[in-house]
Length: 179
Image (tube, rainbow, N blue to C red):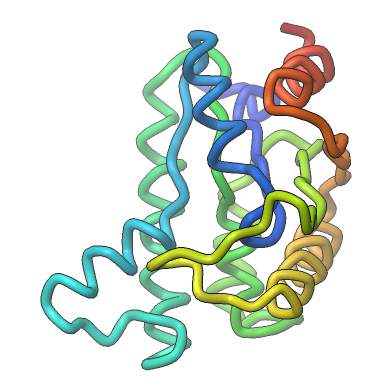
Protein backbone atom coordinates (compact mmCIF):
# COMPACT_ATOMS: atom_id res chain seq x y z
CA UNK A 1 0.00 0.00 0.00
CA UNK A 2 1.32 3.44 -0.91
CA UNK A 3 0.42 6.03 1.72
CA UNK A 4 -0.92 9.39 0.54
CA UNK A 5 1.52 11.87 2.07
CA UNK A 6 -1.19 14.56 2.13
CA UNK A 7 -2.86 12.51 4.87
CA UNK A 8 0.22 12.95 7.11
CA UNK A 9 -0.43 16.46 8.47
CA UNK A 10 2.07 18.23 10.73
CA UNK A 11 1.31 20.87 13.34
CA UNK A 12 4.39 22.73 14.49
CA UNK A 13 5.53 25.88 16.28
CA UNK A 14 7.41 26.91 19.34
CA UNK A 15 6.60 25.65 22.82
CA UNK A 16 3.43 26.94 24.43
CA UNK A 17 1.76 28.02 21.19
CA UNK A 18 -1.24 25.71 21.59
CA UNK A 19 -0.26 22.72 19.42
CA UNK A 20 -0.98 20.02 22.00
CA UNK A 21 -4.33 21.59 22.88
CA UNK A 22 -5.24 21.72 19.18
CA UNK A 23 -4.20 18.09 18.69
CA UNK A 24 -6.44 17.10 21.63
CA UNK A 25 -9.35 18.99 20.05
CA UNK A 26 -8.81 17.29 16.70
CA UNK A 27 -8.79 13.92 18.50
CA UNK A 28 -11.99 14.86 20.34
CA UNK A 29 -13.51 15.46 16.89
CA UNK A 30 -12.60 11.93 15.85
CA UNK A 31 -9.28 12.46 14.07
CA UNK A 32 -6.19 10.35 14.71
CA UNK A 33 -3.12 12.08 16.07
CA UNK A 34 0.42 11.34 17.15
CA UNK A 35 1.83 13.09 20.25
CA UNK A 36 4.96 15.19 20.45
CA UNK A 37 8.02 13.01 20.99
CA UNK A 38 10.21 15.43 22.95
CA UNK A 39 7.89 15.71 25.96
CA UNK A 40 7.56 11.93 26.17
CA UNK A 41 11.30 11.44 25.83
CA UNK A 42 12.02 14.00 28.56
CA UNK A 43 9.57 12.22 30.90
CA UNK A 44 11.15 8.86 30.13
CA UNK A 45 14.70 10.16 30.59
CA UNK A 46 13.74 11.69 33.95
CA UNK A 47 12.65 8.25 35.20
CA UNK A 48 16.22 6.96 35.17
CA UNK A 49 18.42 10.03 34.88
CA UNK A 50 19.01 9.49 31.17
CA UNK A 51 21.31 11.71 29.11
CA UNK A 52 18.98 12.20 26.10
CA UNK A 53 17.90 15.70 27.06
CA UNK A 54 18.66 18.99 25.35
CA UNK A 55 20.77 20.51 28.13
CA UNK A 56 22.65 17.28 28.97
CA UNK A 57 23.43 15.91 25.49
CA UNK A 58 21.86 17.85 22.58
CA UNK A 59 23.14 15.42 19.93
CA UNK A 60 21.79 12.36 21.75
CA UNK A 61 18.48 14.16 22.36
CA UNK A 62 18.21 14.99 18.63
CA UNK A 63 19.07 11.38 17.66
CA UNK A 64 16.45 10.04 20.10
CA UNK A 65 13.79 12.40 18.78
CA UNK A 66 14.67 11.48 15.19
CA UNK A 67 14.38 7.77 15.97
CA UNK A 68 10.97 8.35 17.58
CA UNK A 69 9.72 10.45 14.64
CA UNK A 70 10.91 7.93 12.05
CA UNK A 71 9.29 5.06 13.96
CA UNK A 72 6.03 7.02 14.17
CA UNK A 73 6.10 7.74 10.42
CA UNK A 74 6.77 4.07 9.63
CA UNK A 75 3.92 2.92 11.91
CA UNK A 76 1.54 5.26 10.10
CA UNK A 77 2.28 3.62 6.75
CA UNK A 78 0.05 0.69 7.77
CA UNK A 79 -2.88 2.99 8.60
CA UNK A 80 -5.47 4.69 6.45
CA UNK A 81 -6.89 8.18 6.56
CA UNK A 82 -5.70 11.46 7.92
CA UNK A 83 -3.41 11.68 10.94
CA UNK A 84 -2.12 14.79 12.69
CA UNK A 85 1.45 14.89 14.02
CA UNK A 86 2.51 17.13 16.89
CA UNK A 87 5.88 17.98 15.28
CA UNK A 88 7.77 15.69 12.86
CA UNK A 89 11.01 14.57 11.21
CA UNK A 90 12.06 17.94 9.68
CA UNK A 91 12.32 19.55 13.13
CA UNK A 92 14.37 16.67 14.48
CA UNK A 93 16.59 16.94 11.40
CA UNK A 94 17.22 20.62 12.08
CA UNK A 95 17.80 20.38 15.83
CA UNK A 96 21.56 20.50 15.41
CA UNK A 97 21.43 23.33 12.88
CA UNK A 98 20.95 23.90 9.18
CA UNK A 99 22.16 22.39 7.06
CA UNK A 100 21.78 19.33 9.27
CA UNK A 101 24.15 16.38 9.59
CA UNK A 102 23.94 14.17 6.47
CA UNK A 103 22.01 11.30 8.06
CA UNK A 104 19.43 13.75 9.45
CA UNK A 105 19.02 15.32 5.99
CA UNK A 106 18.54 11.85 4.48
CA UNK A 107 15.82 11.10 7.02
CA UNK A 108 14.00 14.36 6.26
CA UNK A 109 14.20 13.63 2.53
CA UNK A 110 12.92 10.07 2.90
CA UNK A 111 10.20 10.47 5.54
CA UNK A 112 7.97 13.13 3.99
CA UNK A 113 4.65 14.61 5.13
CA UNK A 114 1.87 16.71 3.61
CA UNK A 115 3.45 19.67 1.81
CA UNK A 116 1.45 22.18 3.87
CA UNK A 117 2.46 22.33 7.52
CA UNK A 118 0.35 24.20 10.07
CA UNK A 119 2.35 26.44 12.37
CA UNK A 120 1.07 27.79 15.66
CA UNK A 121 2.67 31.23 16.03
CA UNK A 122 4.05 32.42 19.37
CA UNK A 123 1.16 33.63 21.50
CA UNK A 124 2.16 35.40 24.70
CA UNK A 125 -1.37 35.28 26.15
CA UNK A 126 -1.37 31.47 26.34
CA UNK A 127 2.33 30.78 26.97
CA UNK A 128 3.09 29.04 30.27
CA UNK A 129 6.08 27.09 31.55
CA UNK A 130 5.71 23.69 33.21
CA UNK A 131 7.84 20.74 34.32
CA UNK A 132 8.90 19.81 30.76
CA UNK A 133 8.45 23.21 29.12
CA UNK A 134 11.20 25.16 30.82
CA UNK A 135 12.00 27.53 27.95
CA UNK A 136 11.70 31.26 28.51
CA UNK A 137 9.51 33.36 26.25
CA UNK A 138 12.61 34.43 24.27
CA UNK A 139 13.63 30.77 23.85
CA UNK A 140 10.09 29.99 22.66
CA UNK A 141 10.43 32.72 20.02
CA UNK A 142 13.78 31.26 18.92
CA UNK A 143 12.24 27.77 18.68
CA UNK A 144 9.43 29.17 16.53
CA UNK A 145 12.00 30.70 14.19
CA UNK A 146 13.90 27.39 14.08
CA UNK A 147 10.70 25.47 13.23
CA UNK A 148 9.94 27.88 10.41
CA UNK A 149 13.47 27.58 9.06
CA UNK A 150 13.44 23.77 9.26
CA UNK A 151 10.26 23.29 7.27
CA UNK A 152 11.23 25.94 4.71
CA UNK A 153 14.66 24.30 4.32
CA UNK A 154 13.04 20.95 3.54
CA UNK A 155 10.56 22.43 1.05
CA UNK A 156 7.32 22.58 3.02
CA UNK A 157 4.75 25.38 2.83
CA UNK A 158 3.83 26.92 6.19
CA UNK A 159 0.21 27.79 6.95
CA UNK A 160 -0.04 30.00 10.02
CA UNK A 161 -2.81 29.18 12.49
CA UNK A 162 -4.95 32.08 13.64
CA UNK A 163 -4.61 33.45 17.16
CA UNK A 164 -8.03 32.15 18.11
CA UNK A 165 -9.68 29.72 20.50
CA UNK A 166 -9.06 26.01 20.03
CA UNK A 167 -12.40 25.36 18.31
CA UNK A 168 -11.71 28.05 15.71
CA UNK A 169 -8.21 26.69 15.16
CA UNK A 170 -9.55 23.16 14.70
CA UNK A 171 -12.15 24.47 12.24
CA UNK A 172 -9.35 26.24 10.35
CA UNK A 173 -7.26 23.06 10.11
CA UNK A 174 -10.21 20.90 9.08
CA UNK A 175 -11.22 23.43 6.44
CA UNK A 176 -7.70 23.62 4.97
CA UNK A 177 -7.53 19.80 4.94
CA UNK A 178 -10.88 19.47 3.16
CA UNK A 179 -12.55 17.82 6.16
